[in-house]
Length: 489
Image (cartoon, rainbow, N blue to C red):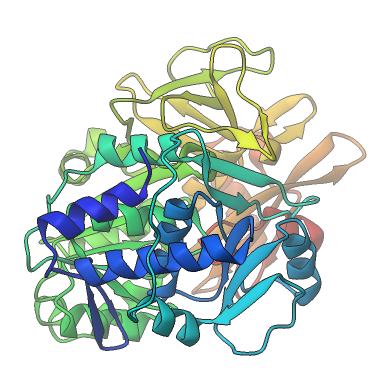
């Protein structure tokens, strides 16, 4: 099954329902489907081997995604926040490429280039459409470059069968009511942005696209566009809450909002508690996934949130990412690769039909199909998954493994601490010791912090150094850049 079939089904079932709203313009399912067919014809006749978009969110992205799928070409969205040198290196790896950018000028050597406006004009005109689709479910549908923060970016490959498996296993066809709308503010080059497009199309839910996140504008779009659903990363939710707390009435600010999903980074328990108290009428869902798993693999659903907020014994589950989807298997393994029991930390392994685990044409799945996520965490007795950062983020002090998350979670319980990052720093005595970077809203001393950690955790968790900063470094999808924090020490 080709991912473009998701759009074809939506166009046949509800052709006049609006699929996308962007800057006040509406695009219906049938128009979007026909635009993708024309885009596919353009891609096919160009002789290019890849279709790439270097731009913020706009209707060009879903049209290019589905058009590339029809033409049998990999879709490669690029991170517009990268430097020109970084982008040049990536574009050289996908030649010959059909590149779509915001500007009419192109600074990169590609086989064919179109501006966003020219591409949309051509796709929405009466031009020729593709005559026959490529139907191979094992073909590469999407190629996403990793962030490359520690080396040359790898190209993660997602095939049609992986993406379709995720959608069919998690989304109900035409499951959205006609008046439902989802606000999409995650960047189009992220797996969350791609899965949002496919999920909304298959559910026949209108997508309201926001090119660049700004909390006041986000709240305003929810109000004016009757947004019912949204996805945010933790840093976005914090800023949205700050705006809402200045509103006279949250109900008036969000007259239609029913559900908010969040993910992409660790959500501090105090932040989600603020959100639940401020928006009791909204269903919250925590979604955890990776590029290599075609997006979400675990969910902490709205009932989980309500139970955790009402039962003190279950409150810790607000810090989890929930349970595995029905088609997903999870294991926690130690350094020797052995499966550990509930409550024991280790590396997260995942298996299922939506899991690709493939880079540059080479699979990293083991002989039984398990993918090593390089994320660290543990499963509790109820099967809820708790993340503790990347496996490489573990601090090794005198041979003892220390999870940064346990220290950070403890400190975020204090009212005067807004954000916290624990990292390892070189130590002659211990090999590594704990260092802390904190964002605070009121004065707190190093001694207070150290005594508090010593009182609640073991002495090995007490930091050697504490640094107070204005803000911690995050990327645009809400992941803490620990490498940057380490450089501070």
